[in-house]
Amino acid sequence: MPVVFTTLIVIVAIVVIVAFIVYAVRSSRRKVERTADTSPVSTRPTPTVSEFHVSGDTASTVFAVPLGDAEPGQHLIDLLSASAVEYVRQKTADGLPLDGVRRIEVSAMRGDVDEKLCTVDLPEPGVLPEVDEKILVELTGDPIAAVQDVVADTSVSTRATGASTLETVGEFISLSGPTEAHLRSIGVDTDAMNLEDLVLGLLRVSGYEVHVGRSGVSGTPGGSAEVYNLTRSGQSTLLMIFGHDEGSHPELADSVLAGFAVAVAQSNPDQAILVTDKYSPYSMYEREKRDKRLVFITRERLQAFVDSFGLT
Image (cartoon, rainbow, N blue to C red; front, side, top):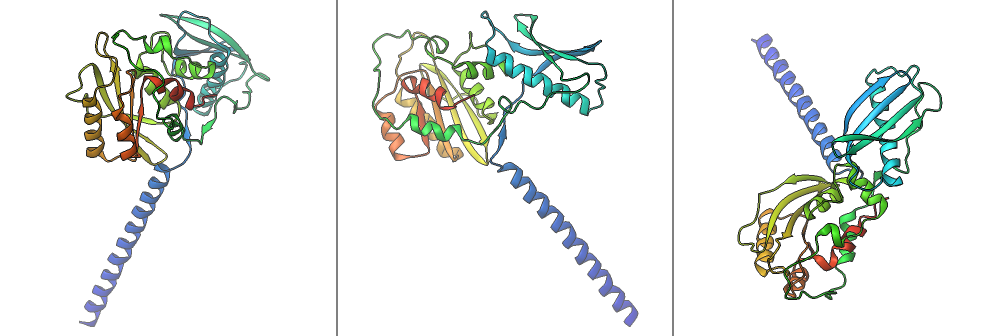
């Protein structure tokens, strides 16, 4: 009997120890995952390579990046050159031999045809240059926080007129060379972009994870609304993009603001942003005062919004 009792005690002790170990491992794993999720550092997405091959002493990379109609700017060439080097570096880490390779050709897409932009000469055969940290940098700032400065002035710079025809985003928004380069690098054709292309592109190159939310918002005449959920540095952001429909009233309707407020109340995010290429209604400012999480980027504020990302 004592032997049986002792055996039971040993078995119970073993079960307790195993359970403790399992709990400790799971807790440690959850802690690591939380740490990864809330890391303050985000990395810009890299351009997509549509074709790669090595022939003789040359490695060729073709990026799925639209060049549009104009000549590519130097910022885009520098960005794709640095990205090509890192792509080849990853290939070598996966086992690709670089013996005898002296250069990397860099190309992008002019319509359906790839166009050579430049050639990166290697320091010596088979040896890649250092990472270009001026171009491929990790992001530590918070561009959404910078957007708060955009809404500090509660005056409306340009009031809507009775006209329903508004310039497109591509016609009235100016992009710096680096901003255009980063947008093109992830596939945004800045010559033909709409509001959604611009806003989502800026967020993605600034390290935000973009997830599609519920499609559309009911009761929003005069435009089309799409809702997205953003995550970065452990913060959640609700984003609504409301594009102007040609022929509709150029000022944002109060019903859109109401629909946005409902979406915010339902999801309870850390931040909430509505971006539109329509003009501001005065009621917008009262909503901003009542809920400091809300940021409205209307037509008057859109250029400052683009500039606030500070892409270099």
